[in-house]
Length: 212
Image (cartoon, rainbow, N blue to C red; front, side, top):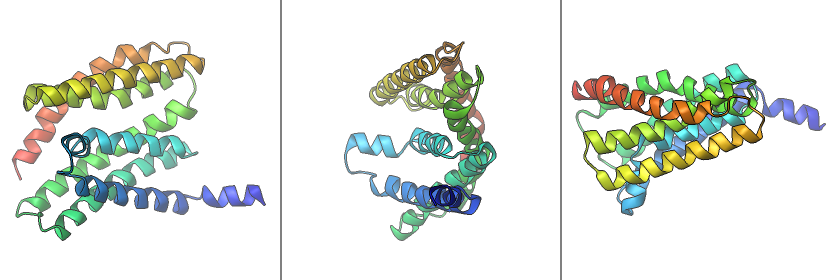
């Protein structure tokens, strides 16, 4: 009976439905928490918030291919939940549709990568697990650079940099304890990935958002 129940819980429809539901709630919550406190404002008005939860969803899904699909569904649902809440809150302006489309496309591109990263970090084999850990930490470090260099929000940037460094350390320790041979690749690649993430966000995503 336990095996039958577990297999039903792992079916693609069940997994993707649960992922979509959580994404919708996450998007709705990040909109709803705007303006509550300065800390929650920055934490919820953040690319990292959505992406870290997408990686967590990937880590919870058993099948690798399903984790990739789950990452895409998670990001699309989160965008949907956020902009649905924005519409009901009467803050969905004239340019909102274009902005929502850009973030949805970005989610379709990045969601599977983060779903893979979460799955690989937990269930993968070999040194690729360290690379996956670096991908997850990259997001927070890259956003710290964006806050500092693009927006000049120095205080918030320091907080994100500290959070990214702490996440990198925790993931590196986790990998070392899990017996990954080159666990140190996580700490070595995360700063490089953070710079690449910042350049992509500033260049490609910034250009797309500026055109809508």
